[in-house]
Structure formats: structure tokens, C-alpha cells
Image (cartoon, rainbow, N blue to C red):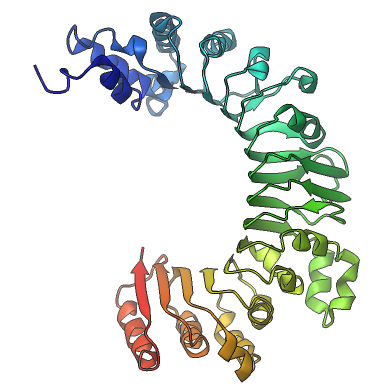
Length: 443
């Protein structure tokens, strides 16, 4: 007998619980010792592609589809009422009644973690039983729709994680839904469809929040967007810039990913403004930035970076900044950010624009000698580095104007030849006489 077969049933079932269910079931043919172990495996991971092989067009064959559903039926029947921890179902073609039955089966057995990825032409409507489970702690849905009027019957007292992707979630329903999730800590919705001109996300228990907001109808800009999440630590927010942010209770947030898209008129006014007073009409975004004033780690999109320097003084505790910038305005913004965020010690560049070759030199010269002596920049990451003359010029400026710099991480982009690293080493060695610097080349 092999060493694995000699292990206790509990350990063997634990090992099988990490395998896709089809593979775990295949072990039953090894010997009588393995025959019934599938009945006690606490986690089920079911993916119809393992049966239907869509790349071979077997999904269209009726008998293969029937064999897949029969397999799931047999596994659940074999397990009876044994406890179950995780249930993951990924399927594109299956009877809705059968899927409902599978979900209700695991709910009755006290499942705590459910993942449903239903790829269908029409959104899958969740069974009512899932909305009142007292054992669910984690629920991840894709292409699955909540029943209409669900807010009255919805109550998941143990749910801590809710992930909804392409699940047709509306902002007005979300506002009614959150109070029924008293211990929810992680919420991710992509997209959240805004039905009304005003939207509020309110939860005292939330610690992580990720939302991508879209609009229903012609208007993409909302009148107001509010956050009442006092215990939130992480925020990932993608939306068009709202006209107002009347309530922003985010005093404990430490990490933010921000993609706020300004309208064309807003961008034009930003670009033509020489004085901050000229853009006060959309200045309510200051309320949002003031709400995240304690943030330590911030990532901003290219569109956000175009107006971020106007508000960056409000996040002057910032230590880590990642941004995308493929326009000349970011170069002008850099000295503003360095002056107004004195604790900033790490910069992450999502690619370097060709604009930066000359513009960066002009921007760096805008920093006074006194300001340069106070810079705490210790680490720089450059992603998508191609080794162009423009990028090499920017790198030289970093070495010249950041005297506290200790580490540079360079991630090679497409068409980046390895011989460029030799030139970078020579460039760095010119400055290593004045301070010690470590450079990492990564793919």
C-alpha cells in the first residue's frame, strides 16, 4: 500500500478538498480504500468546462450536458447531509431548475462560502433561499441577478464578503440592501448602476469597498455621491466626477484606488486654468479628498491625475503614490505633488510618457534647492519600461533630484532589450559616488 492511502480519512478528505470535484471523484477508481471518500470532501469545485470541453464544441452535445448534470446530482446525493464548507459552481449550460436544486442542497447543509459564475444569455435569478442563509460568510456572484423587491426578505446575518460582478445591481437597491448585512466587511460591485442622481453607500462594518459606477440613461454625472463608512480601510472607486460629495465619512481609510473621470468641459477648464479659483465650480471634489485625508497609499488613474494636484495638499500624509500619466500635464504636476506631500517616499510610474523627456526637466527645475533638501523619496518603481531616450532622460533626472533615493525597481515593457540595462547601470554608477542606490531589473 502506498504512503498516501495509509493516511486517515480526515486527512485524505482534506487533501481532496483542494482539488476540482471531477478530479477528486476520479480517485474513487484507485481502490476500495478511496471509493467513498468523495462523500466526505467538505469543499466542492464544479466547472462544466472540465466535462463539456467548449474548445472541442462538446458543449453543444446534449448527451454530454446530461452527463455533467447527472455527475453533480450523484455527488450531492452521495454526500447526503454531510457538512459542506465551500461550493463553487461555474457553468454556462445547465437547467435552471437543476442549478436551483444544487444551491438549495448546499444551503441546507450549512455552506459558508459560495461562488457562482453562471454564463448564460439571460441573467440567472438567485433562489430565494440564498437570501436568508444564516451560515453564509462569503458570497461571490457573476451574471447572477438578485430577485426584484429582495430588500424586504434579504437578511444574511453572518455574511462578511460580498462580490457582485455583472450582476445588475442598482444604487437604490444597494442602499436598502446594506442594512440587512450587519457584519459585512468586504463589498465589491462591478458595475453599480446609478438609477438616481444621488447615491449613498452607508455601512458601519465595511472595511473594504470596491465599486465601479455606471449610469442608467443619458446623464453620466451624478448630482451627489456620499460615503458613510467610518471603519473603511480600503477604497477602490471608479466613477464620473460627481457635482457634490455632501458626506464623506472615510476617516480611517489608509489605501485608496481612485479613478474619477472628469467631463470634457471639466478637463478643458483644468488645462486652461492658471489659478485654482478658476475651477471652484467643480471644487466639491475637495470634499472627497478631504474625506480621505489620512490615506497613506494612493493609486490614481490618468484621468484623475489631471486634477489631483489641485487637491493633493489635503492628503499630505501620503507615503506611497502610483499613477498613470500619458500627457504633458502630469510633468507639470509633479513638483506640486512633491511640495504638498512632504511624507511621500515611494513613487510608482505606470509607464513613462514621451512627454516627460523635456517637460520633466522643466518641472524639476521648478523645485527650489530648499525643497529638494527636504524630499524623502526613497523608492521608485517604473513599470512598462522600454528604454527609450525619453525614459532614460527621466531616469537621469530622478537620480539627480532625489538625493535620498535608495531603490529603483524597473519592470521591463514590451520590446525592451536586455542591453539597455547595461546603460542604466552606467548611469546609476555616476550617482552612486554621492549616495548608495540599489537597482532591480524585473520582468
